[in-house]
Length: 413
Image 1 (cartoon, helix red, strand yellow):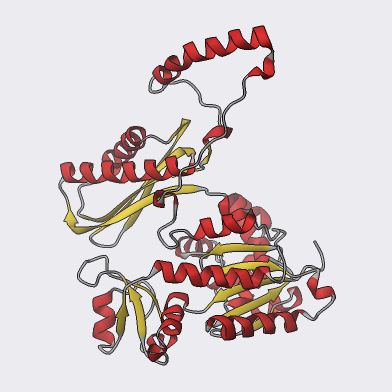
Image 2: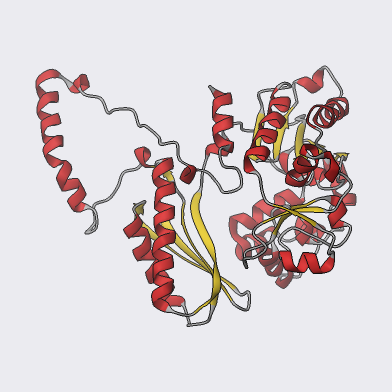
C-alpha cells in the first residue's frame, strides 16, 4: 500500500456555487439554499461563503438566518441542476483515471498513483481545480495524501479553492494538537466518550494505551486510533457507493406531538416509505431502528436486531412501534424516524422460517415440488432462476441526489 497518491475532491458550497454559476448576478452575494421557510423544517441546506461571513451556517433555521442577516437571499433546492453539475464534475475526474470513488453528490476520492509516476501530483491537482473552475464555473478544494483519511483531512484545511498536501510525517505537527472533535469520523458523542478517558486531542488518541481504547471503544476505537496515526489502508473503490448499509426516513412534525394514535399513524407511514425504498433496491435487513427528537431537542435512538430480515411495511412497522412504545415516556416529539440497517441484496440471503413468513413459503411449495420433478427427469440445469428486474424509482434514491446513483451506473456500463 506504500507510495499511493490519493486525492480527495471537495466541491466548495456546492449547491450555492451551482446557483451562482447558473445566475452570475448572485456571485459575491450572501445566498442560501433552504427548505420551505414557512415550515418548521425550514433549515439552511448550504450557503455561500459570503453568507458564512455573516454568521450563517448549514442546519441553521431559516428564520434565525434571516434575523441574523436580513439581506440573505434564499433559494429553493434544484436537484436536477445539482445532479447535472455533479455528473459533469465526475466526468472531469474520470478523464484522468477510472479509479474514482464518489462519496456523495459533491465529493469523491481519486487514486492517481499511476498518473503521478509521469506527472507531479501537485500539477495534476492544479489542473483539475482549474478545469472545474473554467469548464463548470465551480470552485473546489483538493487534499493530496498517501491515504483516504489524510486526503479527506487535507481537503478540509483550506477552503475555498485550496490545495493541501498532507504526508504522514506532517501529522504530529498539523493534526495532533487539534481537539478530537476536529478529526474526520468523530462526532460529539464519540468525542464525549474519549474525553471521559482523558483523551482531548488527536495526539492524545494517537498515543493512548491501545488496550484501554479497545476495552472502552471496541473496534471502532482502534480504527480511530489508527487514523490518528495516519494509518488507513482503504482502497479507492469505484463500486463502493452502491454498497447501501441502511435505508431509512424521518419527518419533522408540524407541531410538538404527544398523541399516541397520531404518532402510530406517522410510524406506519414512515415504515411504508422505508419498505418502498427497500423494495426498489431489492434489499432487506435484520436491524430496525427508530429515532426521536423531543421538543427540547433531545435525540434518542433505539434498535433491535432480529433473527430474520425484514423488508415489508407491516413487519417494519410492528418492530418500530414496539420499540417506540417500550421507550417513549410521553414527552412531546418534534421529529421521528424509522430505519432498517445491515441491509443486503435479498437474492443473497437465506431467510429463516418464522411465524410471520411461513405462509409465504408454503405458497411456493407446489412450485418447488414441480421444479424438483422436472429436474429429476431432465437434469439439474433444466431450470434457472430468472434475472432480477430492479425497479427504477425515486424511492430507491437518497433525498439529496435523486438520480445521482443512476448517473454513475450509466458510467459503469
